[in-house]
Length: 39
Image (cartoon, rainbow, N blue to C red; front, side, top):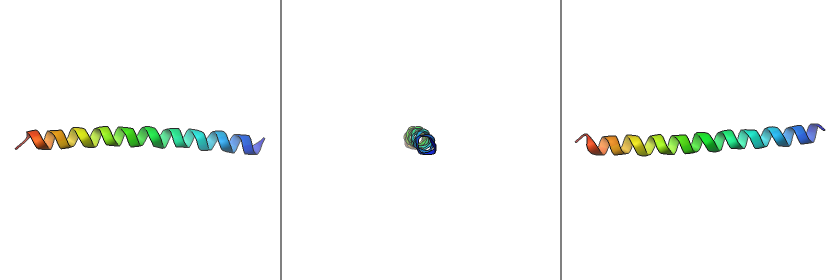
């Protein structure tokens, strides 16, 4: 029982980190495009 809960928790954390990574990548690309357009 605890092992299953730990696995589910780990899977949820992995999903959260993956979502954060994608969001950071999109934000970085957006900022780079803005910096490229500014000058």
